[in-house]
Length: 167
Length: 150
Image (cartoon, rainbow over all chains, first blue to last red; front, side, top):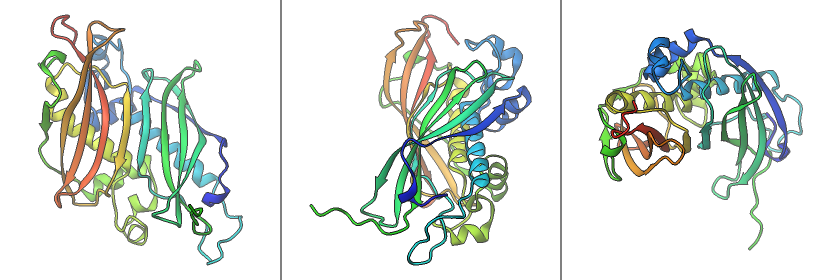
């Protein structure tokens, strides 16, 4: 990953696509979300969804899987080094996410394309060697409909410590 | 069956405790979040998280299952349109024992779906040290007793 300082707002990346099979939907649901519309085709037909749909947590977990794969395939090895010799950031933990929306059902057989756009960078007075980067993440189905979105947050290392502007 | 009409602000449910194993943390991470601090003890110790711990999405999924088994299983739950915010406040380490309290923070009729009601919830996951691991503010659509939706 790039240093916090080098991340540009508005950068948009395609994370790739994932097809949700009925088998995968039911396997995830059996572990984490065994509601009838996630677990069983026949029972799902009787619900307001009218058929088997993926758990929203399954959709989110698949986003994470594609994000990690993207990161691993685009690891930044070049870049201006830190003056104190720290290695390039590898991506850090997240304090959580904002504004997650399950907009339309993800149905068995749907292929979801995910993309991520950098929308905000936040300086931290409390942690001068870290900043928060916020990304708008979106999932579109094979008909181009937006089905899933959220604002992700990552703690990203800075090349040089943040110096707050003088008040 | 618990319907939308049965809930009011302040209504809450507390789940039984669950202990999270090394195997389930690694199993989830291998499939969905293969970062070193979710996969490897030595790498995790050297990371900012300080030890092998669950993916945040695993925490959310575990929470879903715990609340499901204590609430959804007996409720006219019709799915969620989203989560306003989820905060991963402390790592969920191997062997930690957690429980969840889910409290109703809002309830209203659905304008677009008269057979449904909308409920807002605040979930808190607490570990055996009394620390808050995760909180979130989420929404659940529910069937109404008077319209017989389920």
